[in-house]
Amino acid sequence: MMRCWLALLFLLPLAHFASAAGEPAAVHMIEPRGFGHFVGDLIERNAEFEVSDGETFVPASLPQPGQLAYWLELRSAEIGQRSRAGRRTITLQLTYQLFYVPIDTRKVRIPPTNIALKGPQGTRVATIPAFTFLISPIREIYPEKSGETTATFLKDDARAEYIRTASVRRAAAGSALTAALAIGLLAFHLAWWPFHKRAGRPFTEAQRVVTDHRECYPALLLALHRAFDRSQGHRLLAADVEGFLDVRQEHAAARDAIERFFKASQTYFFAGDAVAAEAAMPRSSLEQLAARLAKNERAAR
Image 1: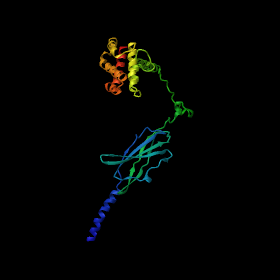
Image 2 (image 1 turned 135 degrees about the horizontal axis):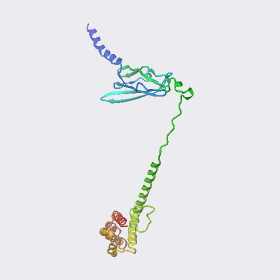
Image 3 (image 1 turned 90 degrees about the horizontal axis):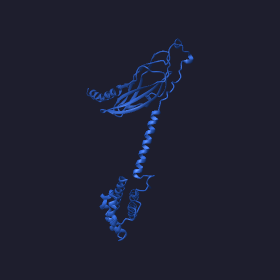
């Protein structure tokens, strides 16, 4: 008697395992419309299978693309997967193409398909149900009643209509012309190429040299000196700064920076102390002064 109970206790988990392995898998179908299909149409059916961890399709049980009937062909069978709310779902997208040319509206049926799922608990079968839908003709049943013949069943392609684009082309041309004019005016204002060599913008030209990091420090000083000379019309020394600012009042707010520049230039070229000159007017300060003078120059002219 004791042996019977022990055997029963041993077989209970196996019975539960076998029951779980043989339980059919749930299938959720997303079907296309059941009417209004014609020869050549593609029909997509999406099957969703709720599975456990490690469970997947048995490859040999999957539908293979190819001709299923004289009127139906399976074009593709694509597998996907996703997880939602802790549940794992694998999907199978079946794409069919119709080759049936009915003479009137007919009801046709895609037969069911069994899919095997294999996992740690064994193998079970899921069934993709049959799908019934209506396929319609692309011509009249008796075209001769409307005056058509077999030579006129197939219609010519619809002719493409011309779209008037004159107003669009005019608007595009006007926009392009306005943009080109605006860019030209901006280039002239900022002395970009090809206006970078025009007279009357010496500080703008000097700014390009000062902001060129390939140039050495004395070249930056000389570039600003030549800009002051051209702006004043003659050589400008440190003693002439006051007269320069009286004539070029747009630069009056930069008086302190201009005086420091001339002092640094004197220290470099006359005292020969390059370290003290760069300490008094470093490269960054020269760049700021050049940018400020160029901006004042553009605003005044």
